[in-house]
Length: 312
Image 1 (spheres, rainbow, N blue to C red):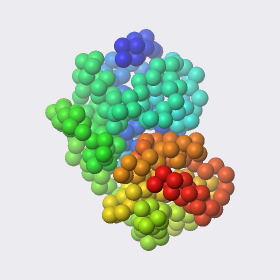
Image 2 (cartoon, one colour):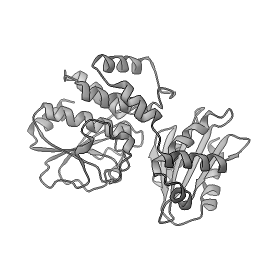
Image 3 (cartoon, one colour):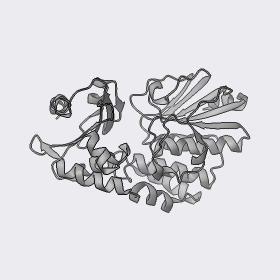
């Protein structure tokens, strides 16, 4: 941690990086780091290659500062919640600090602060701030809480423990706007997302004695509902609430007819093992991958279900 502070102190222009298609943890940790660097009177930019970021995250402090072009003058970059270099969305030529919690992290940074036992990157960052006596203001506390909320699945994840609730209490004591986070992350939904949810649950199938819930979403489903890619995630998560379901599989056909896969699990089933077979990654209970060759949704379903059956 002291080495990270030393690099920050010496840098002239620092870029914080959120990963491709960022979630609340990547945006929240980058937002909190952005605030910290402003406190230190540093020249700072915020980079994310994705142009259309989920608008439900637009409440985050400094969200309007995000740019999709990487500044040439940067002499230090800090990647937040990025498990590997592909997730950065760009080639970083300056020194790079990697702060993350994914078990599949490839330790690609010049400095790596990776703690896989932490529930979110924002939790790691808060620990970093506390260790170094950094004053956490309202904006930072809100952004850090948002990452905890999202990556803990609204504090329902099996990883949740008493230590996490101590962290939450401290962030609330530091004036985190938890009501704003809860409303936008847990409750906010678009018309397209509602329409897509209806389609997904209507077409959902249950396999292996209802232990696996399968969602196949075509490009036509996406276009007809007007939904965004991230809108597929909520129904996937909700299906795990069914009594016998242990694994939920989403196969979403993209506009180029390649397929994006997402996996969720409970009851100790490690779906990350499946994702890494396709150069994907994530966590034991939440993982994702891409099928880069063009195959039908039916072919993809058969292939992935065979792997899921082995894990069950």
